[in-house]
Length: 418
Ligand SMILES: Cc1cc2nc3c(=O)[nH]c(=O)nc-3n(C[C@H](O)[C@H](O)[C@H](O)COP(=O)(O)OP(=O)(O)OC[C@H]3O[C@@H](n4cnc5c(N)ncnc54)[C@H](O)[C@@H]3O)c2cc1C
Image (cartoon, rainbow, N blue to C red):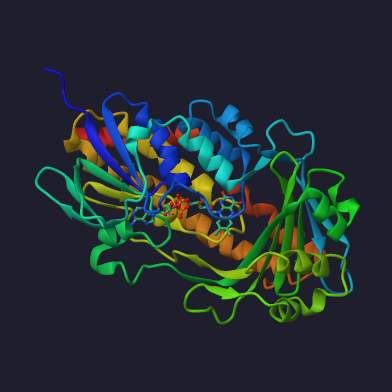
């Protein structure tokens, strides 16, 4: 008799949920359903940068990821140029990161376009928008999931990809969930997308001769701009140090607030132009950056968490979605190795052991990088010291995925044969 497929419910259809759905939907012994709370699967926010490492992880999940990234109109970042943004040295070059001639450059892509391409290969029958999950109960035979519309589903396992304020995380961490919930990281940011020509006019032609990402470091803040959507749009970001985070994570932006946050920048070459662009949008808002300071486990029984539900991080190293793709890569490799729902608990335990230390390292490193970028580290705004401080921060993100997956599968084999 043919064995029935292992049924997995994925809660959340953001970059994490949609990417793992691609790899799991190709495993013949697994059946998945993806539930998204919003009326449509959609990505808010502007752009996401994908390092070569993140692209490799995505390649493990998506059948033709290069083509998908092309269709999403990703733009290669020829290089990242770091400049001094405030004070007497404003306008000076700090350093160029990356190599314009590199074969595998970082890519920058509009979030909505990337999500659209991640969803495109998935059959509509497994995608369930307008399904806000409210609670989870473990049963003798699996996991029951309840939704706000009164429906319930039973699965052999559940993967929570429901973002930073994850309800699945609350279930996984149980009585410790409050203690380990996300909290402010000490920074805020705001962003705007503007047509390329408008950005060129506001910020100066010289900054747009190459598809280059610019980062401006200065007192208490950081400004970034990069080109996306095949060179038709520019994303501008202002981030700053946040001493008193608002309780609901967001605040209405005023010109007065931005002028105060960038007080020592205003006579420099970049801040006034970016402030103008940010303030021209409807309802400009600033958002606090929140993160998980620690997480005691990513799994409980047949339920696990991935992506921002497991390890929400500040965006300073541009590594959040790459980490979600790595979660998906490891989970898919492990799930491809089992044939019975009885082995899922072992899979999730190994996933937790392999992924949690790395997820936490990224969170901590990213926060530290933000401190350097806003002139708050011991390096202050000394160009030489900043270069020294930043140089070693990205290396650990590069990983030999083949050995990483092998290590996970080996651990699973050991656990299943014990
Ligand atoms: C400002 C900013 C800039 C960033 N820049 C970068 C970058 O350049 N590079 C990079 O790699 N990363 C970056 N990141 C991080 C990256 O965006 C995230 O790590 C990634 O988007 C997380 O995806 P996710 O699917 O885990 O979470 P989310 O995108 O939050 O998706 C969760 C989904 O779950 C749904 N959901 C929530 N609750 C429920 C429920 N109860 N039932 C059903 N569905 C539910 C939500 O509606 C949502 O669609 C940045 C993050 C921020 C905040």
